[in-house]
Length: 129
Image 1: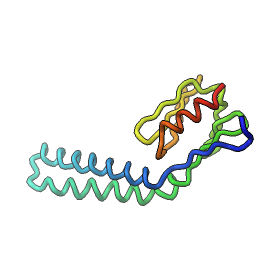
Image 2: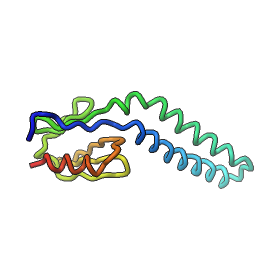
Image 3: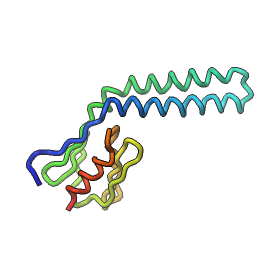
């Protein structure tokens, strides 16, 4: 393996697209709850769902988009001092724009907002012994 680390950074466009999808679900869910409660103003659920996810996206953007994982020195190294030895990885799979890494010990880690999750999965699997 090369001495140059392989990096997986969060993608801004993927982050925005994920939040648009979450907004649609939040809007529909909030409207559904208001409808079940018999509230005649179910449109308020759409506004509330959109506002909640838009605020979440804005509030967490700087933190989430700064997260970078990399493969180097025989490990997958992530934010907050996460270090996963490559020989401890038993499963790597994509879930929407996320990549889940599962270790022999059962720990699960997410590499979030990948523009090409299949390529991230392939790179990690290719680096594992």
